[in-house]
Image (tube, rainbow, N blue to C red; front, side):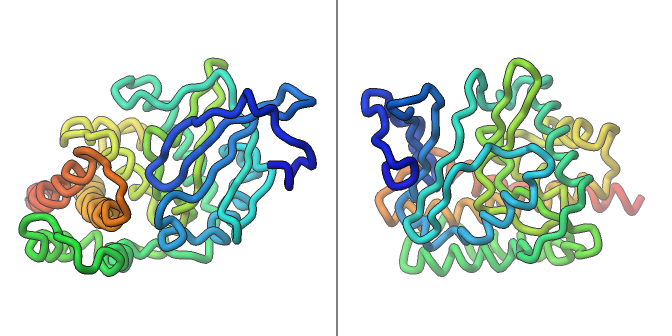
Length: 287
């Protein structure tokens, strides 16, 4: 902090904001001003998980849209980021339809912009990568069979390039900050990559713990209409793959001493359940 601002922070203002799943964040103010700032530090094993230059490129890409927090300083080598604190705001309540609607409108703004991005999100490759990082750890029950079922899903295999654009990839309720005046921010672009827009919707759904009916309602909110069966099938397939992805991510992080309660099991449950949802929707589409 002293390196960036050339003055000491007001140490009495320093407090932990959260111990995130990827990073740890702290609030502080400077001695000579009242502006608050957030210092984000790499969590355990984060250097293996995050492409920080790619993250910085994503922040620069979305800056004209006004969606993200205001960066003050980034040091990729040291593994920290400082941004301005956003006051009078709270994270999205995934059980509040009005707040969810604001988040989906924010995602649509991102996706409609069709921002090009060099790094592509290869979800099958990332599943394998996290599995490799967790080498030697005990994997969940029936892992080989579940993984095979997930990767056999046609939407996961296709991921059409022609409709891809910059996506957040970690667009979960906790990464949306809503201000009472109507402004909304989408934070933490460290996993951002080029992908298909429904990938972001699927990631929101599995983090929120939505069932099939709630997911369909989320899709309708995002699309502004009832989803077609093929759109539902595609979203469920991304939910299955996302569940496996974050389950493997948790296995790796737990080797480093971090714990996530029931989160890993909930993510793996989507990998087990969603392939059946996909098959049912594809059958409906063919009738």
